[in-house]
Length: 128
Image (cartoon, rainbow, N blue to C red; front, side, top):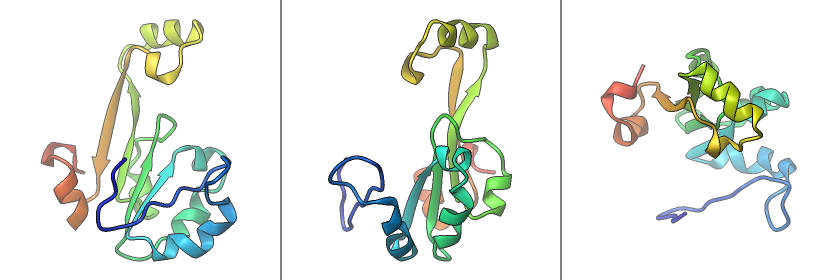
């Protein structure tokens, strides 16, 4: 990943990355925040969204991200996830132990709320 005119900070459990506790200090200063859909599953999404400053571009992404406009009401600017388009094929590949990249029968989708940065990142057809 290439960063221009900015700094990338990642919060995760790997050595050398920021601890999750640093989020309270760093997220409010960020212009762009990317959160995984897993934050919804582990019940941290509301808290992380509340840390985002007004006007920040907030992206919720990953295969576990629900493609629901309700996330826009909670501060997300862009949501990006997966939609099952062939249930039989998806169940077959998941049943065979496929990683997400190997799962067939899904379509990756990105939806954006009207926002200055989102306008420059996504085609108009993807916006809600």
